Length: 460
Image (cartoon, rainbow, N blue to C red; front, side, top):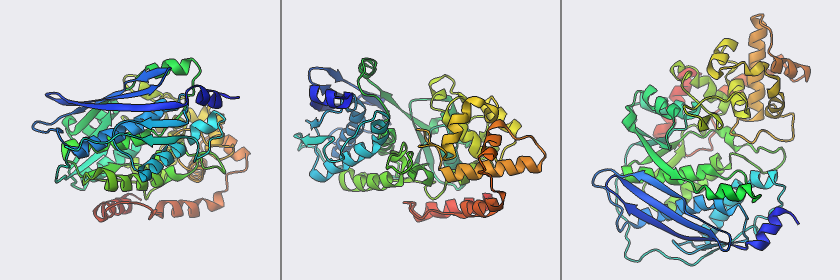
């Protein structure tokens, strides 16, 4: 019997016991209590900045959002033993909501199940029971939100979104979970004051790490759903209407060939639609959640991004490097390699080296990741990377450019040609198709769609 079956048998119940909201002079503090009875208790939390005069006392809408954020947080702790019963003793859930959360967790945990060799069944992997209710004295509060809240991660995608909206004259503020140098630099480089950045503090309960060190189940969870619910709360507190994400159409592609396992599920259009519906039916904030870059592929975004050269020295997309202060490109992970590849048609080898601090395309340690990124492996790297087709297009364009300039091909590009993948006759057609594409599976309001199309015409 494997870990999954053993832990489920030993710890059959996980409990979402409570959430607590406290207002201080300058903040709103949220604390959760989760528990594996007989094993461990967890008390993660959040700190949200509170504007002068704002209160959440008696506010049913805010309670719903905080409760929902707790549901998004809980899966990170539940996954340690994957208890077959998830008992909710606070808030409210109807049957449709239970189905909604089961879908998010199952799809968002696809990578965890795959990597850990777990054969989980979508219907029976967890049974959610809800026994709580909201205080009957709470009432919804009418608000008139306006403006855009743009979550910033420090990478090229959110930088492009912010730059485009600011240049179009949209009223923008920015959002981040915790604070990093690249995030602050992105905001100020876009021409906004640092005060335009609203930072929420996430307080992770590190006792979960102790369980992981003891051999309990660990792996990827749908973190972008946490971003979504916490951004909803931040927008609500600050009176912002639009929550403008920067997820692209490439996030819809499965990470594992032939299977429905997507590292980026909670960045996919499917989740975006589901979240949009959940907000309308159960949160009632009057806010609108969507991704501005959803019509575009990573290749298009890269081409548009490099035209704003002021960001090249400050943007960062490396998850490992984000744990260092100030955040860096580690130069050793598949995310660093992917960004280097997708930018390679538009920047010279010297410019790429200046961005990443090393010559990644000549690094033999990158060969395995490279093979995964170009689709010559069972799966792509378990990272937020673009589609296989657009990586191949970027590599092919970069090879052609180097050969036309009489420059020596780097190690990885020589590997590409040795596999007979380079077909120069198809490059122009594929390039034109990719650059001109506009995925109509999106939730952009008409005003934002007009802004994006105008920017595409200008840059592409």
